[in-house]
Image (cartoon, rainbow, N blue to C red; front, side, top):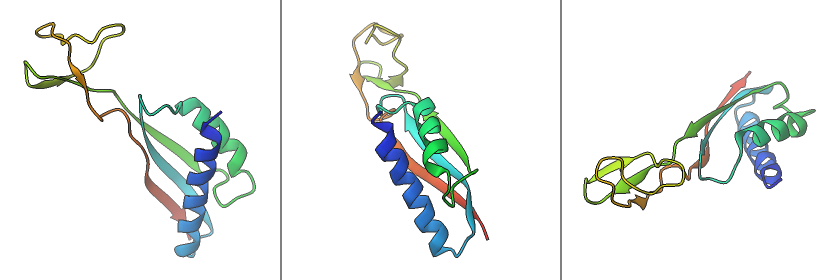
Length: 114
């Protein structure tokens, strides 16, 4: 349910950008959502459809790009995708370290129609 307020906020951002561009409506909102951001793309989509109704964002496409979580192995000096229930590097077996990749959440692009 924590997706509701952030969805409302990115709709407000898109509506503000549409007003600034003197556009009639928003046609597409592109989000980048990391796997570890804490936001579920399905919930964002559901709330988007509800909240956008009656706004300049109604019927806009919500495009969500998901960023896979990445870990880093100091021994191999390389990033890797962590396997479920394991922190081990797939090359050397040593436990890696989390990185910030996969924690993203931001509006990448807003498209409007004039």
